[in-house]
Length: 335
Image 1 (spheres, one colour):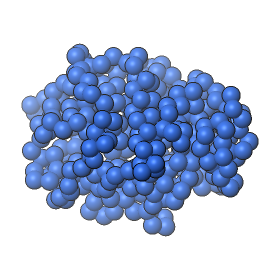
Image 2 (cartoon, rainbow, N blue to C red; image 1 turned 135 degrees about the vertical axis):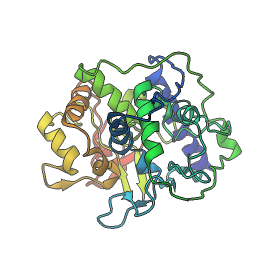
Image 3 (cartoon, one colour; image 1 turned 90 degrees about the vertical axis):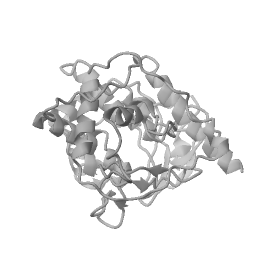
């Protein structure tokens, strides 16, 4: 029971953390799909494909992944976008990522564009259920109307796959952790995409980097003071690791330059040698454009440096900084 309460607290922490990071954002309504009656243009479909597959990486959660040697979590044949049981073993109950393909009976084929958009940006399912915030709709509220329309247009074009999965049964004790409805009230415009930092911030929110790269305490208390500093436990078919500190602090990635960052994101290897754990999902992110990767790096350089040493090659030890247990934990001091 103590572990269940602890994990519940962790989930609350994630919700509160993301919510706090978004408090300065403008709440906006779900707009109808901006697709002409003649059908979506090729550019819109390509933008939607890019966001679904390489930025928001929807298929990473909504597909049954191949986590065997060399599979690196990519969708199994015939399972692309067809839904899956969320593989994170730290969750206190089983989360189901539903079928995103346009199958009319088991997927989104019978959903309207507005219903799909509301699920993505407001976390409200077609049947009125509030989605559990493992689905990062708190971040997707930032998604511009044009990008939302592109995502929806692309989802309509995916090959339909019949894949019947149950709805996520949220146990009663955890229903209180679902944030209240956040109705959106005006259109969402994209940020100034010519500004690398604003562009990078937008993309980092879409990719939900903050959730994995921010630690939580054993009590589930929000650690907004350690945002992006790593140390969060990630346990699943990929193994057991703790996320990396990606702030510019000496304990993070200050030695990265733009070229190195892009190489890591393209290859999944640091220095061309050390292979990152596949839970980093660089096999999806490597498809991002050079301009977008440069923008993400530009934004990461503006993050507040946070001293928090995390090393998965070292035996786990207690960390006085995040109150967790991870490699090099003993080298961190209380602030």
